[in-house]
Length: 277
Image 1 (tube, rainbow, N blue to C red):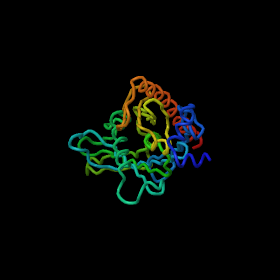
Image 2 (cartoon, rainbow, N blue to C red):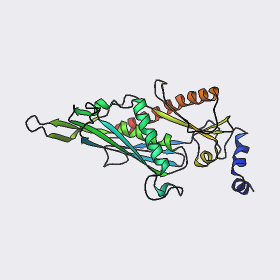
Image 3 (spheres, one colour):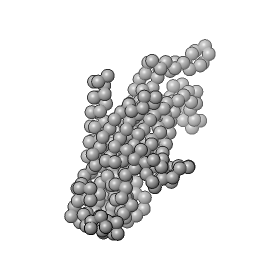
Image 4 (spheres, one colour):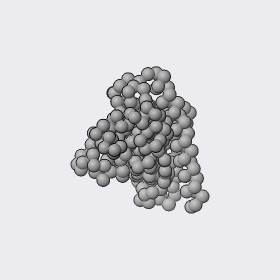
């Protein structure tokens, strides 16, 4: 009977739970799905991480390449994020060019990298105006069940903390860069931005870490990005129903707590990897 009701009236089915301050998957409204993290998952990458939020699974691999700095930033390197949503992660995605959601997520991540100053791009410069690192951050969704942006940002942050860049020495006589892959150093992470996404129902009911079904039924979405200093890095709300200032403040408060939880998880996993090596 419940399965039939869910199929015939999915919104009414969900609202019957939300009005009782719970959700169909058994979580409370402010409860996140179980979050798991694994770093160093891709041996051929300079840094990598795999993140799971419930069923949503995302892997990030970082590849560093030497290139020429841009004219606008001769003393800076740069970071290029790219999100891939292949058909294997969900039947909603089709083969071919990147979907609109993949492109929008890639741009949002690029904006978070810039606004949060997770890395000082000056640190990626090797020889001003001549040589710098570019970090290609390829983020692939392996299983899509909502809250893609949060999972992507956690995977990116963990992969950046796992990244080791080889030593580069420029030959004074030939001006040719020489890469020493045996001698590597970690990236300096300046900030630890973490995003927290919410689905909004009827202008007043907020659910954190929404599933794909909740996202499709919600009247609006909201994403808040904060760092370890409780600094608000970004707020993204792509249309939908309005949200009161009081509810927005509630979301920001929850996001700051989530940031601490995720940073603690990343540090714990990195520490456990170091002790086993």
